[in-house]
Image 1 (tube, rainbow, N blue to C red):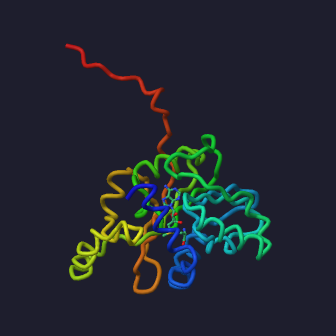
Image 2: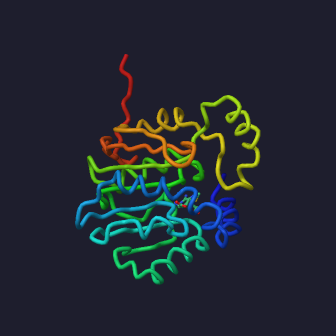
Length: 221
Ligand SMILES: C[S@@+](CC[C@H](N)C(=O)[O-])C[C@H]1O[C@@H](n2cnc3c(N)ncnc32)[C@H](O)[C@@H]1O
């Protein structure tokens, strides 16, 4: 998966995305926003906001920014904001979640809904989410991960070569995601019909250190 493949896939999806992925994945979106327990005045960032299906679910007293790499998906989100009069959605911007333009520690909570298995580099996504989130802030994910059921996981492996066409990796492993990102997990639980997806709630415990500030350690003999 690379950025131009993702843009192409979601350009195709944009006009029927809500019909196919709307109601069926809405319980997960609702659960994640409930779990965030938003407080008045908090700044929330949603990465990969897509057509903005989650936007009407946020409390009206928080400030929500949404970013997405797909201009086509984001224009649907913009139309929803205007149609529904969502004044708490303060920004919708085309931006790469793996390389964000926000300053460090800007947000109280950062959320990725059905995005971790889409981005080219999930580790880089999490590092960026950490960077723009306040220390001890909340990082929350909901995603379909590789099934633990043998039959389903075989189907997912068979579908994996079609990832570029599908616009996501069907065999995305939760264990590997947690290993590689080192997320400090507070809770994990299943959501959506047949528990098809999993929600991961984590604390932003790992301080982000820009690469140029990391002092190399040389071995002494
Ligand atoms: C499966 S959709 C999920 C959309 C939305 N979060 C939802 O709940 O329906 C994945 C979204 O992630 C976006 N995306 C993928 N890679 C991205 C990146 N590097 N930066 C920002 N958005 C990205 C896609 O354009 C797409 O809109």
